Image (cartoon, rainbow, N blue to C red; front, side, top):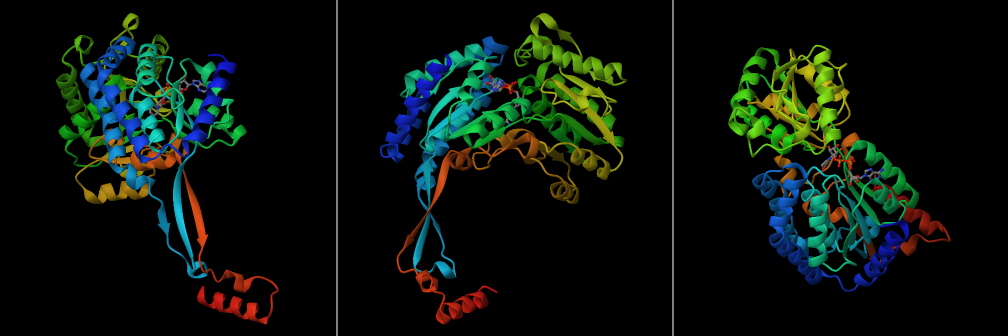
Length: 467
Ligand code: NAD
């Protein structure tokens, strides 16, 4: 689609969005969500086949982590929508006696959703559910790196919903940048920090509010005396599912020095259980999305090893298949590229520490992560990590699944993102909570000019009350 076609599409959405203010109530929004739910069921096989074609994504994993969470999000929104849409009462203060105040959620208008490739269904449709629940119309730009999935998404949405409610604009950065020229009412972007920065700059020109769901390095901090077998289970699954291409995957692990060897043994055992002795042959282990990302990841391993890191496990790769085996590294140092860049692939550095303060200090010295995971049995240690660190979200004795809790907002902080999605938080992201103040018997005109002695006395009285 060229600039003119995108502009025409946007104009059609903008007109429809104004008309929808009076006709897109609870019943209509629920009907749209139900239509989406049904279409997801009918198109599931096509979507699963498309993800497999795009990067060998296992069908069960894709059902669990792409289809089911969207269905859960739809069911949750349908169930709670009536309450979310209800105006919220704001209690009066002393000076506001005689008025009533409400916060009235209203649709922002036309929203742009830009999605990444790593969970191409979930991260396109999850925000879409919130946007529709909040009454918006949406132009969705899925990722060009998963073209089969983007085409399947478009086919499904064209069939399920009117095209002035949801339209799909396929294409790469050029289409995304053309869309960013348009005066959307909200932009919900999921992707890399570098592109997030571009989106925010471009949105500023129209003063369009943005939600940025970004990435970064999410650390794991293991406390002294943790159950290392259980810990390794969560870490290995969280890191290597989706071939490590998960925004909230553990990026690197801090472990007490005395327990490093035991953790490595537990991680290796766990990897054997998950993907067998040769993960290249496992149908449950996927591939890197394309040759560019394969080269980037191979470069991270080579750079680390050249500077003295040790391949503690894995390291095998096959360029023609974009295959990299689950890989554990030890002996990494801050000077290596792998310690600085988000890894976003099946590589896990394990870093020993002598004192928790040292590990916490290293975490706090980096940009605020999207997720932080703490493992341990010592409650005081976990309390300390909660209090002394900051992150988009914190997982205690688990990894990744905080992403799919329907009642937990999901988002980053600082460099890992801005704003939040999911459930009620997603609904509010796509809503303007409009304050409406109504006068019944307000006494405020008593302090209007002229500022006579009576007004001055009332003012003094107010000052005394508000002390
Ligand atoms: P990306 O930033 O390269 O691309 C994301 C989207 O932005 C794509 O649709 C792409 O076409 C578009 N895009 C590319 N260049 C653009 C430009 N100049 N202007 C506007 N849009 C542009 O990210 P990716 O490689 O698809 O995804 C991986 C990244 O996303 C990782 O950093 C990961 O951590 C992050 N991520 C974050 C979350 C989250 O929820 N916080 C979820 C998944 C992925």
